Image (cartoon, rainbow, N blue to C red; front, side, top):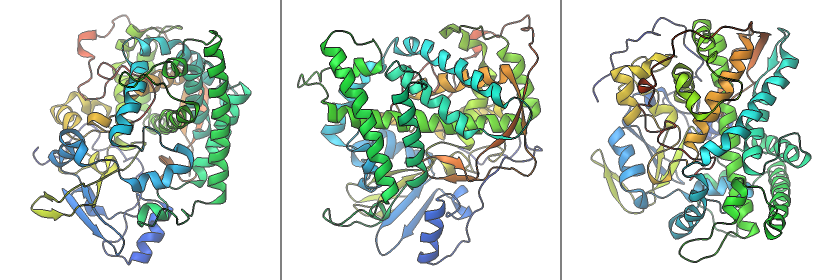
Length: 497
């Protein structure tokens, strides 16, 4: 790809918030302090324009790659040579155990053989009614805030995303006590667990303590205990022939085609934990930033408000073809604020990247946060421009430099689900409410488990007057995604691989 021109429809807009970059040269001690506080602002500004950067410490060596062909080599062409790094599993082990998110090799392949059938074919269509009910419940709860007073929206998007997950996984609305308990425990966990801990940064012996905080361990244990209760109860329902036909039942009754074995309860607890992390936490982050961007840019919000009039009270799959601009707004929010900001792989043998030696065991960091803002690739990379997806630059970057759900064999199996969920919730909220920002409350992006706002995202809501749908309906032939992760190409449900 050639150097981006820097022009675009949103070039003159005030830019959406972006964390400050650190100084180019800092001591290892300073870097560790910055990294612990927020991995985004701990990085230098040059990463937004570099094709590759090397980091050396006494404990590990890592390479961040921002060049599309290198990213493709690691994620798409040779994934077996760059498996997920054990350093990430060290940080997330208290909650995720040995789920599909952290395993590699034969273990990962077996897990995907059991999980994938639940997310194929018409399962996305089957999930839509539960998703729509969750969206209606979200709008009903937001009515309590529709008085023009400031309120923090991330808590509400977390509630909505958790509701979607439990309605589709266990046929339970979030109001059910078991689902609500898991939601509260996970909220505690994500506030106490950094993306990486000491064992993730330093290769330490297996017998050595992992230095997870007491609150982290307690929250993870509580979540797993509650999930175990749900899985055990479902096992009993399956044995009695009384289980609902939802995602949990499908996964728990699907045998591995090679061994004939199904997941045991312990394995299912691991998988549900990652469904909740990938399907709840990431969706909540993406929806919150989408709502903030619409509040910050009223002209874009007005276009969405005009479009969502076309969404009927009980939406069907075909109705999503009527919401192309709403979908592009959500895609743009995922570009600017990818929920998972960095992915770490490990080189299994010595490699050569850009004429530079990459030793065996080096950590390879693929950063959607930096790739989505690469100044050599994107027009107006820091600007909010949902219309970019219809430009040649946007279409090219969608194929080469847009990976909010990862890419290749380990692409998030819930990509299509997440897109449908995000567009539906966004549409229903804008259909019901006018969104406005709060003076003095500009959110500062930080990376914990996902990209969140340091002090929350504060908005004002007021009821929106009902609108009549426009007479002309958009031509569905123009609505297919130009990127690799549109609903048409990933019709699956929440998980991550």
